[in-house]
Structures are given as C-alpha cells and as structure tokens.
Image 1 (cartoon, protein in one colour):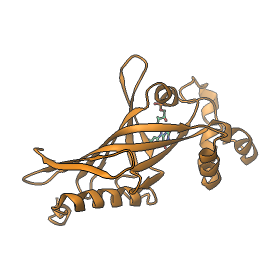
Image 2: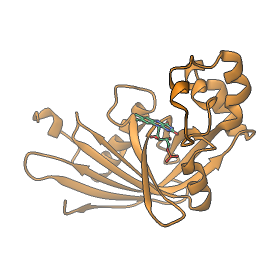
Image 3: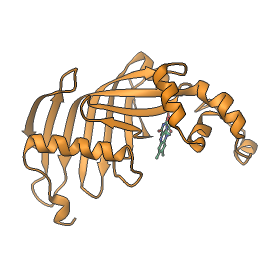
Length: 202
Ligand SMILES: Cc1cc2nc3c(=O)[nH]c(=O)nc-3n(C[C@H](O)[C@H](O)[C@H](O)COP(=O)(O)O)c2cc1C
C-alpha cells in the first residue's frame, strides 16, 4: 500500500464530503472502485441476500444512490416486502470500505422515473432486460443462442426494467491502513442533511 493511498482528510466533515465525491464519481466512471457494489437485502425467510450491482447514480445533497434491476428478479420481490438494505463497497486504490444503510424506493416500468432512466440507457444495457426471468432455469442449448434483436429489446425489455432509489441514512466509513486503521460513522436525516458524525474504534 502506498503512502498516497493513506492520505485522506482527517476532519469528519471533509471525510463525509470526500466519500460522497467518490460515490458521485463511481456513478459515471467504470474505473472507480465503487462502480460495482454489493446490494444486500433480507428475504422472506429472514435470510441475508447479497449481489453485485452497478452504481448508476449518486447525489450527495439528497444522499441518494440509484441502481437498475429486473422487476422479475428475486431481489425486487424481497425489496418490495422489506425495503431495508445495506450497500457495501471497497475501493482497492484508496483502501476505503463504505457500508451504507437505508431504505429503497421501487420504481417499476411505467413510472416516470423508470421511463426517464430507460431513455438514458444504452442499447446494450437495455438488452439485459429482454431475456427470460432472472433465476429461472435455462436450457443449455439456449445459452449460445444469438442475442435478441434490438426490436425485441425495445418491445420487451422496458416492461421489466426497474429503478431502485436508495436513501442513505448511515455511512460506516473505514480506511484500511498499514497501521492505525480509521473508522467513522455518519448519519443523515430524512432530507439528507448530516445529522451526526463520530470516530469509531476500527
Ligand atoms: C459486476 C456485476 C454487476 C452487476 N450489476 C447488476 C445490476 O446493476 N443490476 C442487477 O439487477 N444485477 C446486476 N448483476 C447481477 C446480480 O449480481 C445478480 O446476480 C442478479 O441481479 C440476480 O440477483 P437476485 O437473484 O438477488 O435478484 C451484476 C453482476 C455483476 C457480477
């Protein structure tokens, strides 16, 4: 680990600001360590579930993160029943772990937010919503079939597209260092304003 990677603000307000800058960058940069994060939910049997998702949007003023998914997926059903989630990410360059907690709002096809997000999606991303329901069994012969046509994508995919708006209420910030790891906790109120922050023992 380089010394540069251990350079981080030592003031809590600056750490909060820098963490949200990292998230905003990750939403637009495929190179960012927080581009792919773990979205964790609780299923109907109270078992923890986790899966990688692409961070599609981040807004520091409202403390909102945005994800896209298929409304036929198990996660959509889980989140409909229990919207409490944890999002976990780690950036190897900065050695930072972010553990974010809050609740998601689900915006299915036909909603204004889902329609607006669908319009912004590139064709290759839209294609991922035009296949069979996620998690259903697939015949081996179908695996090498050609990808669906753009027309099929346009017609079918949008009906399965869903947007998750994650309102963050807590950020557990952890920096892995050669010595003296650092950890801090930030909580946000319902408007997204910083409500409290403090250092924690790592
Ligand atoms: C790097 C990576 C990024 C992924 N991004 C997404 C995503 O943005 N949205 C999504 O629904 N699934 C994404 N997936 C697939 C999910 O991890 C998961 O396998 C799938 O959504 C089914 O999850 P579920 O059965 O819990 O609903 C991604 C997988 C990987 C490996």
